Image (tube, rainbow, N blue to C red):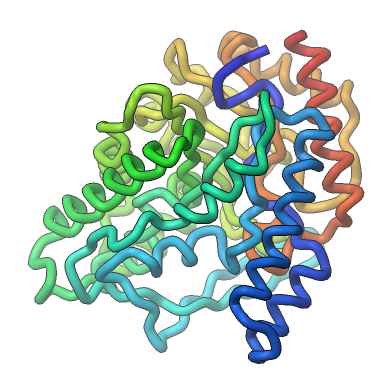
Length: 371
């Protein structure tokens, strides 16, 4: 078994919010309880969910993203120079039962991008205080590319940034400072969540980007360069991974397609320690793109779906791990869910017990495969 992240049995980050936490969020929104009251409920819920992660045998623990409404926008809006607008972004999702749309505020870059605070700094410090020996506290944040993917050039005020090069330089610098600060808080496991690098495998998504004026055929190369710039100065001992999925909202997805379009550049050039890859069904393609992963990098196979509660079988998981090992050495593989269980506050369509069963299945299967 591995002693450094990512671990043989791992998970992406977000977890189902308990009912009492959802209730407290509603009360806070209505002004019925104070921010301090809400944070006390969050603290208790996080203590419990950290214990759960330990009990099922995981070696990493997140706070379940319990203090967030969204996996990415709660971070992005706290960067200086970025604000929500009155415009709405519509993201079209679909699942096995039909279609639905997700609506959120658009963003505007109307000032120089900068880090005004250590985003989620207090949240991480609390999480770290709750993890016992043998458990590594994991912080998840959206990758820099998510700031650009949500709006593209049209979201950037030309009076602030006459060229995208200036925008990217400031954004990567802000991220680099965030990385430095969280490492200073003791973070040893940082994950950059990124849907854009998976979305770009879908011709329909590339078409949408081209229609808004972006260079869809080469966008992933820019994103790879900027992520590398953001983590280039990370201190020794800080392990960085990225998670790529095709959308995760109330058990639905937004994009389809294997990793073929981005694979060669992504796996050979992105300077992270591990890749969390969505591989829970045919939407994700086959394992052939893993042939581009260089020695020393870990691929965490997201074979266990978070989109429904039906429990996978160990035999099926082991068979698929064997299939992946035809393209990359078994020692470079690990196992996880395909995504978080609750990328937004609403959560996916499964129960708490089903979530726990899936996490336990992952740890048991990993122990049988890797010892």
